[in-house]
Length: 236
Image (cartoon, rainbow, N blue to C red; front, side, top):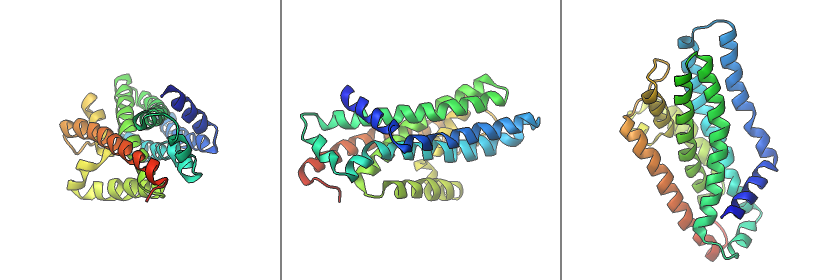
């Protein structure tokens, strides 16, 4: 499992895909620093920068880039079937790749959100944002790793989930929020450190339970799905 994790990490950071992880976090920190430099009150810029950009764009997009990248290239070039010929449990392959993707996403998103939280003047709020980003990283990554096994266009479907389900329906149709990782993240951060800058729209119980379900269900289905590659050698 450790060998698969090392190979995955080396492959992830050895591609141009890794460079795509930098612009969004830098933009997030830059906007917050710009507002801070002009002495704009955090209550005026916090919601659009943290919630509308940080949690709605930066976190899910980075998770999408990383989550679809740890398996996507191997599926595209056919090397996944070669990996499956090795005496490795399917569970270990998925868990290793998922953990690498989740940890990379968590580090890449929690640090800039922590910095943004500090720029609001509250270390406690910064910690709440970082914790929420870690939770969201594990949930989003599990979903996007699964999508890379279910379809040949995981990035497209991931963008549909982010932009349409969470970005559009999640804001206007209350029932869809139960399946919105963005809403879980906002609620968790707001629960840890209540503030007017965040507007969580699901209960904290829903946020915690559903985040765990996204991780567990997506991972289990991904493990089962990977088993079909050893038989069919391709996705449907």
